[in-house]
Length: 161
Image (cartoon, rainbow, N blue to C red; front, side, top):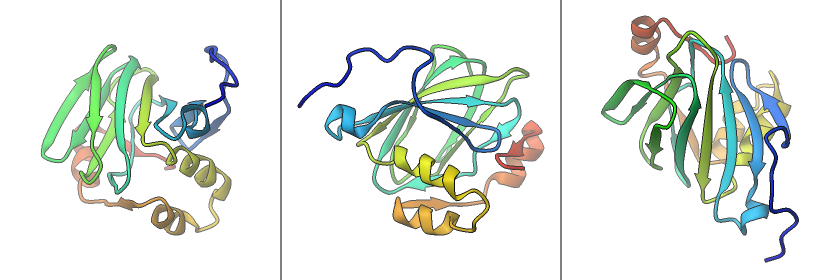
């Protein structure tokens, strides 16, 4: 495998914004032979990611800044601070949110790689109505099952609202 770079600096990487959460691309599948991808997620306070299930990949999140809440299957954590890891296995419904009063930031490893391109396509789609098509393309199923409970209990807003 050829290497195009061995260092990705803090201010490097394309970024997109998804209405309350960003995606900063650090390593793509092209950089890792398809093994994994790495993105950073800056998240505004009080923002909730719509609960979802991945069919093809696992996600491993490391809290860099702020406080993150998460629900993965039947497990819920209200506050995970810097240095905490969150494991979100494929096939298991999960969500996460910024549980603190300040911006938070996650480092997310996606294995295997490929799903990172979903974020690019989602940002490019905007309000075009292609979200269901993109979710199907990437083996992603969204659910609103936990939304009312989590938004009420933690005073959250879904991304994009």
